[in-house]
Length: 327
Image 1 (spheres, rainbow, N blue to C red):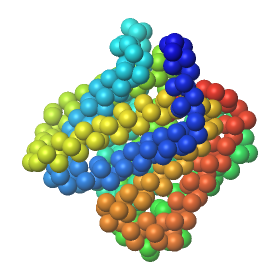
Image 2 (cartoon, helix red, strand yellow):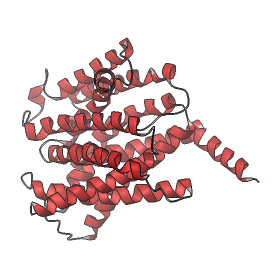
Image 3 (cartoon, one colour):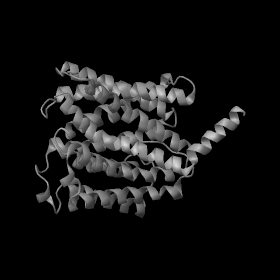
Image 4 (cartoon, rainbow, N blue to C red):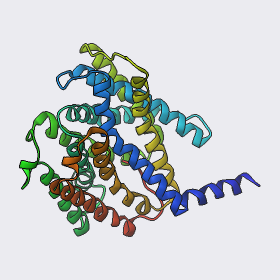
């Protein structure tokens, strides 16, 4: 069998819908598990809500691992070392500051001060902020009724989980350190998503992502050390947790990129609605947040957010055929 025939068989494999669906679900399980995995890490490493330095240090170690894994996985798939062009380092630094340093400083802060269920649902707002930034800030696409409807439904779900009409079901109220920080994290996510779409015209998105993970991780690590952060590895569970946190970003990003390379964007992107679903379910299972996850308000918010993501991504069927990029 020739190399060309082997390549065509691989393309057919990744485009086979059961494989596409199961791989997309696996990616969503990884992304959805990030919230409980980080909150479990706080317990394993004994990091309290007030210990900002150690949270930053933890995030730094996670993304150093994620960067190395992404570069290795991407190089294996490409069958050559992934090395950025000299002209790409400026783009990598910008992405590192937006996607890793900015987003995850607030993301890790939020998860120390809010529940996993709330965090998972609010985090989905990044999908809708990305649409609005792409339309009004970066001018990458035009606004349509379907996009607006999806965003409105999604934000209604966010408002609901923040206490609109059901605050009595949730303890603790709304705080800047918790829910506020998660919303800020989604703004950084949206900005980085639009930016990587622009930069991907000049550089391989896997190269950009892998190296920005690493650079951002080093920056967070140095900041954490300078602020006096500490990570005490008291058991093998601590090491396994760190490796898993790194694999969440590296594994999910790499596999999602493979799916986008061999399938229409709409076919893959619409499956992203499962992200918040798994975030909520895994928080219920591993963090004991069943009452919040399966309350009427929690379920209604999750349905609205997921429906908003579906509606927004269905539009891609009319505007995209075979390629795209991950945000």
